[in-house]
Image (cartoon, rainbow, N blue to C red; front, side, top):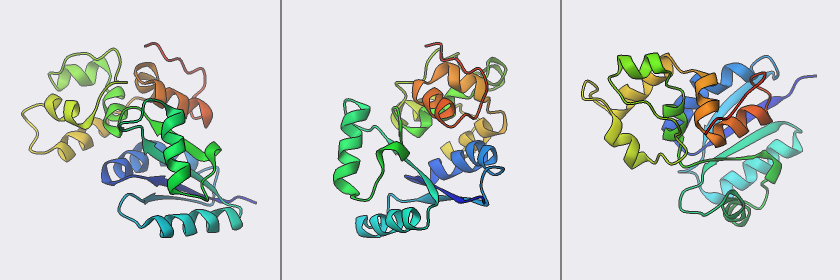
Length: 181
């Protein structure tokens, strides 16, 4: 019997990314895959939701940016403090922020068509850096993000971003993955 998968993400940029890039890799494994933003939801409601998912014996992935924390371990401690029903094995920490995962998926061809410089690693990309890299032809960061998602390459992303590599490897979404940075 298949189960449901809930992917809890921080906000809209994460919803777009996980909906377009990640969800298709899970749909054959689960009866349903739901992406739920939690950043603007009260802590108590998120706790109740996590508890109910566990009670129904469904699966979840809890995604959070590392933000100002110095390590994945430190960020997980913050999450354990905030959410008393969270399972450490279900937490994925994005380093630094989801924008780093977007940029990691740009291939050489995509970068060239966007008139952007090549990025060997996106591990240090923040929202602020991402915003400075948006080519002038885009009216908004969301338009730019949609353009990235059109040609997103998992292979490129695992090579350029360590936390994305960890995610893909943990959930067996690609065979023979290699992180090169």
